[in-house]
Length: 298
Image (cartoon, rainbow, N blue to C red):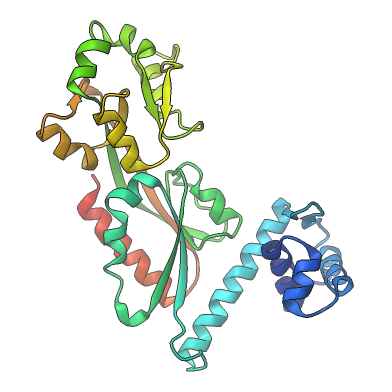
């Protein structure tokens, strides 16, 4: 029974995924497209699974994601080993890729990165994604770590709780008076609402909880795909929305926002998931994120 995964074949698969096509991977690795195809086919025969869908660009299967994640972890370990042995190029920095939700990015997360020791020479590659979907980027091997709402560890990853981000149902005072008069369960489904994008159902979920599972937010909705822009749109009176407590506090104090349902705040648990690697840079980032979360989250 063959159990080894030949490293040249693994690296070739990663090149095909990163470049998008067999021809582009061949150019990047300075070999022929035929050689690329043969290596990928040999790896698929060795694993007994289809790893790539031959589309343009190529797409990984579920089994392919496992191998790609392994390839990226292997590359990370190799770079760390070269750095410890003094074999890295002068000035070469360690890159750490992290998926993080927009609200964390706009409030507490960047402060965490400033706590990573400068002598480690870490470069951050941040990918903004909803906290419900960041785990998928880990699963696909596209990032090394993620702030996620899932406590279930992605295979090959560790997970730790960070805390809870509190969201408040808020609107401008004028909007509250004109659009949210009367019982909320009747007014909210008709009042214009601000959402992050077409996948954002946070406001809809709030209305359903208020109405015991019925309905959702108004079809009159404004899509504002940045955390800062979202808050500004709500404060400007375009609609109501669920805003992080950290972003709402100053505007509430200034009277530019009102919490129209103070007993119905929503806490979203956040978790840190990362590859199980003995990487000094990744460990330092994880420690900095955890320490900042203790101070910033509930």
